Length: 236
Image 1 (tube, rainbow, N blue to C red):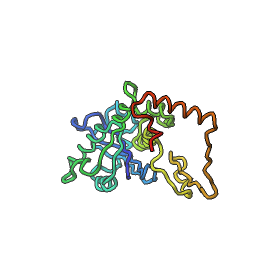
Image 2 (cartoon, helix red, strand yellow; image 1 turned 30 degrees about the horizontal axis):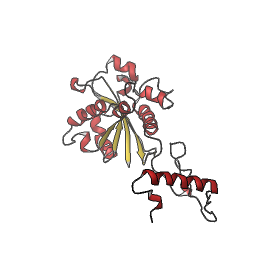
Image 3 (cartoon, rainbow, N blue to C red; image 1 turned 45 degrees about the horizontal axis):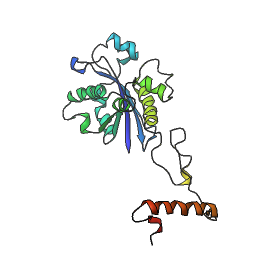
């Protein structure tokens, strides 16, 4: 199974008000293993970034002045995402912005036309009702290191969310019955299962002693007396 953990940074909060994506960060998981085949890009939004947004992610218009526009990278992005399951924290926000960007281009459709979407915020609220389920709160709950996160960043947040998602869903994907795979995925929440060599092993049989047999028969006598058709253990 191929999954893409995705995050975006934007000029503001509402795509309906013309706010744009300025950073996209994606981390690839295949069969719940990090592959290193990531996608990361900064984008020129052709509008001013809200001051409140700059406080969150630290990205300025000056930094983005020479960066590509969304339409320059749209084909590459959709090719990368196609057929994968997107793992996003608070998915309506990022999907709303991606759909708004795609709507500016002809024939691109919506994100759900290209891949499925899994919202880890919805998942976390089901697992931890009544608790804080922000990405930082989940990092604390699942002991995921987020010490580098002094500012939001799409790629960094996607990397952290990948660790949180794997921890929140059990860490391990599929059991491996091949002893040669025991060390694969080390450090990524994966674990192998060693095949046991049963050659030369024998089954140990422990027989009941006379006292235990007598107690068993007494119990069956009591059942015979209480049950109309007798104890099933004594039926031939």
